[in-house]
Length: 122
Image (cartoon, rainbow, N blue to C red; front, side, top):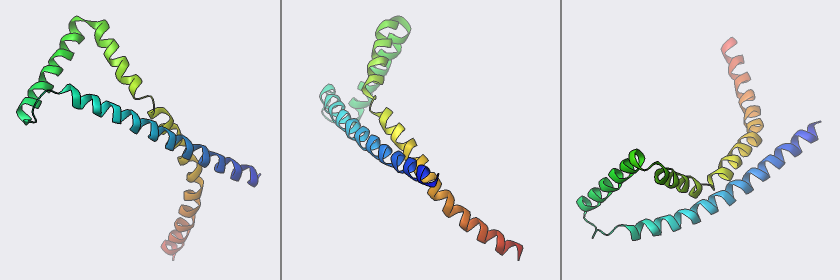
């Protein structure tokens, strides 16, 4: 029984680490492409005022699209959500790692809690 728990924890830790690392790799590769695209989309010379104006105009265009052109707005939201699909393995990997290490941390926490409770009773 103890071996089954140990192998389950080790499988969770291994699978979690693999999913987390692959997801982060894909996410950062995807963000690199997005950052390159964003850098090319701004036509300002670096002035902070012109950048703020461009962002404001883009926000106004998004609001206009939301109210008057729902299909275009929904397509844009869909593209944004699809671009962050690598977050799914990152979250799953983090949950598996948490489950794998939860038992180890609980054992350590139990030892310190029992010693603290013994000190409090004395």
